Image 1 (tube, rainbow, N blue to C red):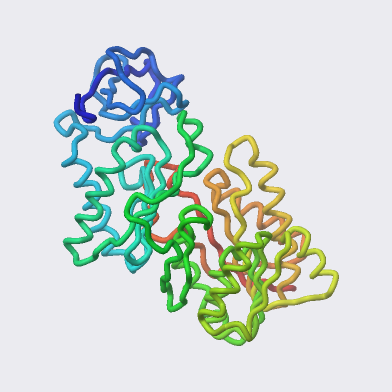
Image 2: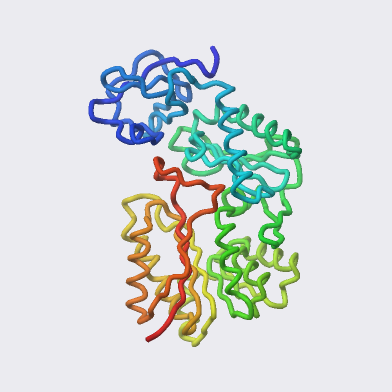
Length: 403
């Protein structure tokens, strides 16, 4: 039996399926009225409304709360190798138009109509994250299509590494895995972004090794940095800090709680010749900021780029308190007329709540904020309006002033 052959039908309950009918991709277990045929986990199924109206083809998993994820909405376009290649080609053609593709995200799951898979390109290396059983079955075909499409443009992929080690795979009844999908290669990959050089550790770094989604935001910060004293919190491998140094900052302090991240940030600073203008602190930002305030420290620019404080709706209130606390303390460290760059990478912390939380922090810190820019993720991480989960990154630059 072909992996593309539909082996069953999932019928939606009456007045359910609002997400997919609005252009989304997910069908939850409690939206399903009946399953007929013999669908296997990871296999393709037909999806119909309660009255038999055809809604699309998707892949099925009885172990997941998200029971079906759609791949095609048209009966005349079943899931096939040709359809997957078309999705891949469209994704590449889009990126060539909107961003520097030397290192970029090639596939962004639902936003590229391939739910469950992410592929990042670091120069001539691909790093893949496969999060669902259905897409795992199609992964090899998708990757081959990517290699072929890039080759047509003269880009020879020299290695592929898998970072499917996210905990969310367990919700699909899958093991967490990582390793080579090609012949082994040096997994510390040199890249250049916005003029800054990095070594990306695709084997041991967070996620796929580097946060490409902040590319344009890092560049936006550069113009404020000449001659500045900069504090970069949650620096990871030093990306905002290095962009500040590249743009001519007088001095940059980079902070992260991870020894490995600080070690990598320090290495990246040396790679760029910035060591004399940078120092690195391994510390919990929540503990460090009050200490810096007590010491009377002041900076021209403070950057707050924390990890997601919430990955579910149930913890939004606690997350808002965390964002409020770090922004309040961050503002207190910005000298009058200086700048605060602050982020949230949580989908559940929506833009309105994020703004409200920052406004509360400003009120309590007795500061006034003059917004310079509101930005989102780089366009290689496209926001598909019918897939709310594709919009997650909020990035705001403020001038911090006192009355």
